[in-house]
Amino acid sequence: MTESSARSPSGGRCVQAAQHAATTLGNTVGYLSAVFMIVMAASIILGIVMRTTHIDNSWTYDVDLFALSWLAFVGASFTALREAHVTSGIALENMYPRSARIMHILRFIIIAGFLVVFTISGYTQFSDSLLAHETTLDVMSWPVWIPHLALPVGTLLWLIFEVHLFVRRLTTPRS
Image 1 (cartoon, helix red, strand yellow):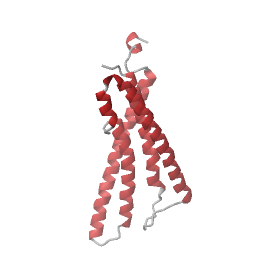
Image 2 (cartoon, rainbow, N blue to C red):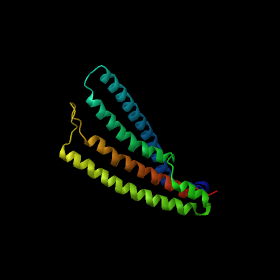
Image 3 (cartoon, rainbow, N blue to C red):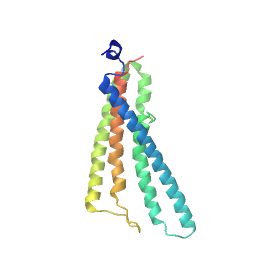
Image 4 (cartoon, helix red, strand yellow):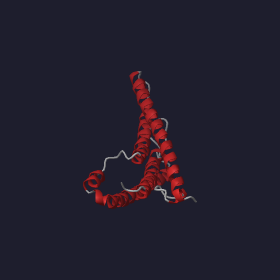
């Protein structure tokens, strides 16, 4: 190991590999969010056209909701990775720059705790829906576990990205 890599501000090789993996996962999630947005927009447009031409389109409403569920939760994790969420921590960190590190730790504990509880709750809803074989009431009878799976997947991704950002904040030297 060279002296420069030993003093690397971003941590050791394991930390750098984890940071790279989180960034790659984040880019994938960003593309996935874009796909959900396109599916939702196309489904809404198709639903409008079908409604205008008096064709049964009850299934497009479910596709809209499914895509919206996935977009909301997966997109939220992507927004967290890009640090585009507005939080009260931003104002507090700027008001009290000496306590910024403590604010980062408190923020991480609060958000990570919330996301763990939310992930467990979402997984419970998903498994209940899967075991009950719930389906939508339209002609297509879509399985309801599909949108329910968006909650635990999205919050778990968000938790991964929060850990990524927390490690990056702790390993980056303060200026």
